Image (tube, rainbow, N blue to C red; front, side, top):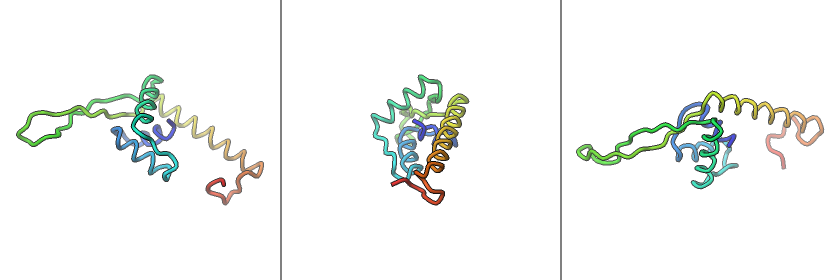
Length: 111
């Protein structure tokens, strides 16, 4: 869920873009399937960390008046605060790992 908050921090996105951007951001370390994504989005909504917007998207020829709704997700002020708090917590844990020798300052990824 933290990765979702990170990708929504910059801009609102629809579900497929969130899946793609999480995978890109984590360099393939986190891959979200549709079920996991939408369960996570629902949980983030219930917790007030994101909100859902509706966007009407035309999916047919200009002469066809039908359109579908696309769910767009946006981070809330509470979501920004939660992302910042989690980033601070993780940063402190990485610093602790360096202090005890689990990570060196030149290691990018732990083995």
